[in-house]
Image (cartoon, protein in one colour):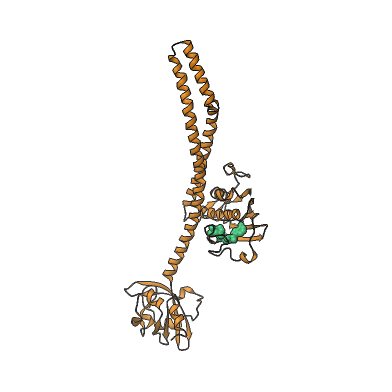
Length: 400
Ligand SMILES: Nc1ncnc2c1ncn2[C@@H]1O[C@H](COP(=O)(O)OP(=O)(O)OP(=O)(O)O)[C@@H](O)[C@H]1O
Ligand SMILES: [Mg+2]
């Protein structure tokens, strides 16, 4: 039996011991649970009864006995099998073994569980980023909708007053005498002054144009959101990094605007291949982190340029900086120095994973008390179109 029964029983991966002839001596609870057997069913049985090659045919004991005896297989393909589960289902596993005297310890990594776990992680990451974007977008849309609705209320009040004045003037048609006309005109004059009609008339065009501005801001945000949702699995679309930065600023603006002046130095860069929504998520996370690192008021400088075979983006903030002992951990999932409710610690991990998917790189330099610079490099793969930024100054809708 194993050196430590407890350890054998506690390990969450399916493990069994085999004798020199490949008969199962013991299987741990994770093994029995994963493949649906009772210990009594399997102990004493040849491992080849359960381990099949992927096509579903049996494996000869010799194949198993000759398999590489390392816990870290150098050739994973060579050790993939399927396990015949109780009830007839098949489960893909990665078989690894080590010899212990006259018996061998066999680990059968449940690849289905692994695939399931990695799908869950990807889904959680996506939910975290969608949640953050949704919160940012809700704020951003709420703002213009709030002022559109308050301006529409004012316009409604003003037009009611103007309408009443016009009805008053219209009623002058039916005056019976000059005296009556004079009295009514005086009354209307008083009403004109009291109701500030001059001001109401002159204000309406301005109020309407601000409503239109607010509506176009909402449209802009919705367009950005659409581009985030669209082609989500398309990792190979042609994308301008400068556009990605503009969209990310729009989405994260609510978090940024109270903390930082944004200085953009967007260069002429070739388009890259990638997924716009995911890259927007990268930059929203970086910009929001930069804003959150700024205690009161500071600057975020965003620079894009072509550097060899890369489009290089530099995001520099004048925030609190990252303590040297935290530097190595910031890309780890759930590492956060922020209070509960503000940080989940998933932002930079998501950034890192998305950049990996794009063949990109990210590096960081930081000085406590001075600020932080993230450098993001995305590969140019046979890109053709050179994309110039729309403007070098912050776009007007960001200067609200
Ligand atoms: N620009 C920055 N300046 C200073 N510290 C930073 C900066 N960016 C990241 N960090 C540090 O890295 C940590 C991890 O960042 P990350 O974005 O992964 O998580 P978070 O911002 O704490 O939470 P969230 O999941 O909401 O993004 C932060 O808590 C912070 O300590
Ligand atoms: Mg963050």
